[in-house]
Length: 321
Ligand code: MRU
Image (cartoon, rainbow, N blue to C red):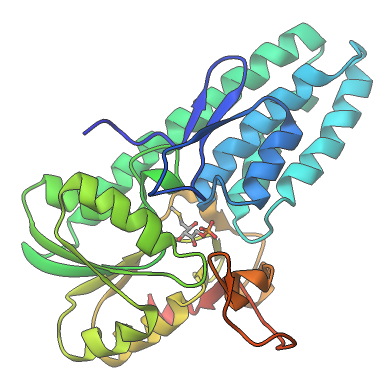
């Protein structure tokens, strides 16, 4: 199997594997402006905390190239503004703001426009490589926690698609599988955007790891019947006390795992830590459009006039992790 590459920098533009089209179609879209990247982030053509961070870094490279001035002070001021748009494209995953901050350090410490273009591209490439390396390391360390013969439950998509490559929680599962563990995976479909049914299932089938897909509301049933040895999920932001924001439904799974004495692990790189926030109650939670809930594909399923709440993430208290 060839490695799944959700993001590819060509040196000129950013190629994005459009995750809204998977698994039916493997469509690669080209982002050649920072606004294209922001649009891809908002529409979730690219998603998953680490992948958002890497995409954000290339948005800054593209923004720098588009400027029509060589005055470094003006460049710095304009990139500061672009950085704010990029960092706020999705609010919960801290990796986005973290990568913009890293890119802004380069912006503010460079004295000429020519040098800045080169340094920003090098920094974005470095960020990409570091993410793949971190994921492989997370996989290696995390796989030690997986029993020789185990059924592992996971939520959302935390695989290669959600990162620069390899994956975080799915990287742990993958590394355990590659090291010879006898594994079964239970993947939740992950309402309403179906990252589990559309993306995790697609990745696990390609990896050849035996997997059953369940509806989110079957988690209590499978865990309480003793079918799950451990849960491994990813994270979008981890506060200083260990409280963890992740895809909506993660908290439910953690409580059910705790109630049934099943270990619940979070696999994430250090770019997902936000030590400026004392606890999870300070984490901003993205509210997405209600159309994701009232429609099934192109068909309206809920009554016209109904109110909708669509928080995209929840916070799992550290005591369950
Ligand atoms: O809304 P998404 O699909 O971007 O949410 C993704 C998740 O919640 C993942 O679990 C998290 O970003 C970790 S990805 C390695």
